[in-house]
Image (cartoon, rainbow, N blue to C red; front, side, top):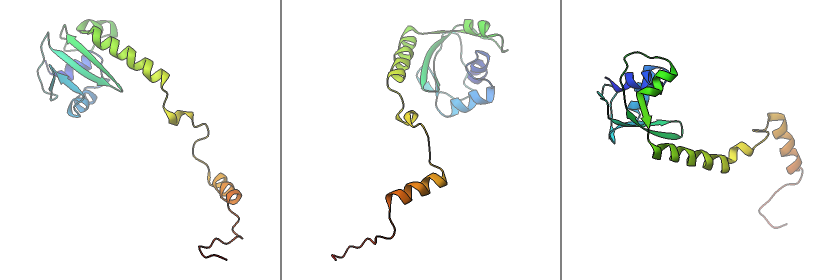
Length: 133
């Protein structure tokens, strides 16, 4: 079975074309090797799939040519214990070390606010000069 079709059927990606794009970008590996969307996989293969900031290492347990419910899709693979522990550690790290940009409350100033800042900091009547007066 093609890997892009399996990833779609196992509900890793919403569409088969999204799965193909992620494979072409190098975000999916089969048995620690880069894959192409047409790569044939079989039961027992180990896949490393990147979803957002997280990596999942899964072992293929079953094949299904159609996309079923989420409960059926979960029976198609088994995530490794190391992968689950790594994702939990990474989630905890993201929680404890927040992105500095998220602390910005107001965002970028408006044109009016920028003018107020400029007028408050500079008195354009005072002339700046490099010469000594």
